[in-house]
Image (cartoon, rainbow, N blue to C red):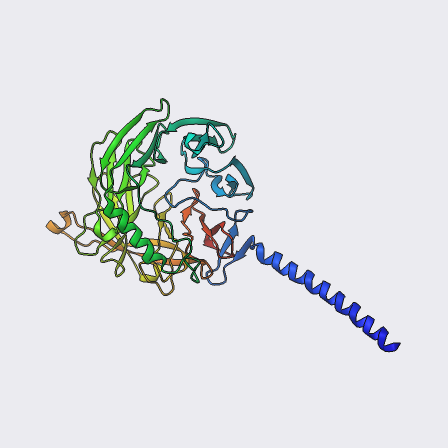
Length: 436
């Protein structure tokens, strides 16, 4: 009898313990699924905040403007469409619902421009039409802008009168990873970089006819800017000159003269960088916020010596800032006043093969003193310097299948980036000043 009581008591205790353990496990899982909203990075001393509330929310590509004209909001992509995040209150607000491709936020109007496929018949994929829409970040007023007969739209000019896009004739090879490829520890398919380089080389060798075009926002008129068998990519309008376009010749960077500018009327085609050695590469180009300078990743040669290079459009003056291997970043960006740079780091599989490169970086540019006099001082030589690096966020847990894509907030107090360091993708911001 006593043994039966003891057994029943032990069973009840076991059941109770199991329930408690289950609740604790669920609580732990729930906590693990919810990344922290704010913390001080113990390795850097900088405050990091999570801006997004919904998993799989990402900030835009590094050279796409995502900020409202008053600097108070940033646009992000979500599984449901597009949302804004108030940089002060962190309020997340959906403004566009559906499967859309964001282009850019207008610097003048505050409209978010995006591409959306409209189907005249829900069951007829061939009846789909692609349109550019604009939705105002504050009022949510939405309107159709222009129908795109083919290709894609990627940029809006400074006065928001023109759209910029490209199309390709022929069947282009795919850049998608093999669907059955096993994943490595970084979350990418094994041999991802080798496979991607092979795919890029295949497209490069195809030499398919390509067309760069503009669309008049008011009338829908399409004008051809350039036709070429070069792979035209990374198209972007100047943030200040509505008639200036920058684009690249895509492909293996060591085989192409990558960075070019051209006018919207097809005039003034200009190559921005000319290599001086074999295997020298330049790319991931972007405009400074004032439109005065083009900045780009420069390696002399590839994977060995690292620079952030600048080309001043009005004078042709060149400035190169040197970086250490571990400080190289997939993408760089510059603050509104041009006094600070940021980088999103990279893993060991990237071109720099950095042993300790998984950080969000802040860089302070420092020019080498120019003591030249006489004839040498009049020569158009490159002015060199160094970027003094400060680590902002430890990304050791980040999987670089997702590129963080840093950008400075307009007030230059924060660096915004996206990361999967806690599992799902979220949009974060790190304070430029160290926490007190």
